[in-house]
Image (cartoon, rainbow, N blue to C red; front, side):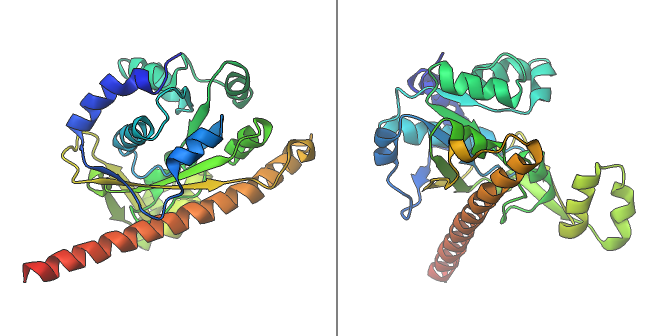
Length: 271
């Protein structure tokens, strides 16, 4: 089991590859206080484009190293198909600290009983491909809330700005939607509503700056209130996950507005 400190050398090279300019957005909750106060955290990170998690996670690791989180031991939920892709699977095993795609129950058991302090999730999942770079895509699953409730941990919500050059959002006209009917129904319905497909640039480097925004969320749902019925449980979890989605969306909006304001000031200064 690796700690954040154990990732520091690999993280050094990731920062060299992407960017060394990493900042915490000033309105963030106190990250050092959060890490010192909470022995376990479910960390829900805004996905961004499909290519964005690598530099964003490098930024989070950098922040943890600088704010008292070097000894924390992270576990990460990654799309299980990656464990079957040659070469990629070795990187995924190293980052996630898991050797294969696990069920939700298996992840919960590892988080609760094997010494891990933090569970990283990207709740938008592959739905990040169906949105632009200024909004939060719908969450693929509310299951991360159950992890937090059963582990008696809050959710550290993380939004970011700066990786937008790592993808190109393509807008679909209504007349072209029939070409995408091969998608699963849920994905097609989202695409029909948003009409955006976000194409990632996995080898994009030289990011100017990554800004990370941290807010702590405490679910109101208690473990003893969790239903034993799967459908009712999902409804309970969805209520809480929608609160996280709204919070993350507000955080992303603040970041976008701050970026636009800074860009406008820079343009005025040039003139």
